[in-house]
Image (cartoon, rainbow, N blue to C red):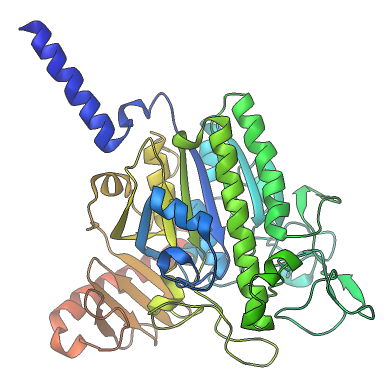
Length: 483
């Protein structure tokens, strides 16, 4: 009888392992963690969301291997507050990061990198930073070393990262340190294809590697490759030291200016110059994500690595040079970057963790970048006793593991005069700071074409009260209540 019980228990454990992953091992063996972020990549700019023109075979494979998050939200329709939310689990309105090139990651905030570093992880940031300046001494990026940037110094190496290879803000997606000497902001032919009379000047930014230090070699060609060239040695070293690692890999692609190298531009010559560069730089980034996953497999750590892929907001809506529509696609959704309509905040999303989350499926669970911190700490079995402050994200690990598509807490948003609250089905939206509201049924009206507020006044009342309570909480945080 005893042997039968043992056999039964073993069979049950094996079944649980196969269905849910090796969750019992989490405390002894935390996963490595990688946060990959594209910049201004629209929901409709990837093959796994139905794009028939842009080639993203590696991301498509990643979506097949993991979970395609059909309702993944950036915390803001602008990059800086979304990035701040990734590292803190909190909306940027709580500490002054409310739009691009604004505020910084305050020293009192507990960043994900700080928490994981204290837990023994090797930590590295690679690519765009954009939650503070990287120097007070020289002109750099949008704000660094200028009067505008005074008081906003907050580099990765002072926020929990052991290794840094970072720019403050955008750079061209090919030959990232240079631009033609003209006023073009959107795209151009790279030096390799440019006319012989083109003059080239500095882009007035650096890839910073520490205080007062920037990289000086291997900075030409595809910017995504330049970034991944720094990521791989970091991962190699961590694995060699048998340390878990955390890497935030924040590509600049496809934020303007978009420039595709000759190999990638050639793939899209039939689409015209603008799309050629926009599409080409996305495919170049995709290739580097494939290269990253190959290295994880070669090192034998792919199954033990938790990866999130997303964009920081929806696609750019205008060509800054001539006011024409930019090539990015929000898919079937209304709005673009800088709006709290779905096109501005619903972005491509994937989660992959072979040993922890069963893949090979899609999920309509609403997930947000603010969910990263609590979810990752749960996956790593870490309780951060020092972070006693309001979080705007929630731990969605068990929901992803069980395939549940309902979350306990709705997702709140604020961007300038726009407010929104999204639950499992409904979305409340205001474009006047909460003076008036519209209500959309996201199950039947993903295009946000029909305002249902008049038909559901009680729902509007409940959701608006909750949303305004949250904005009051953010104001209190911004005034120092959390520190």
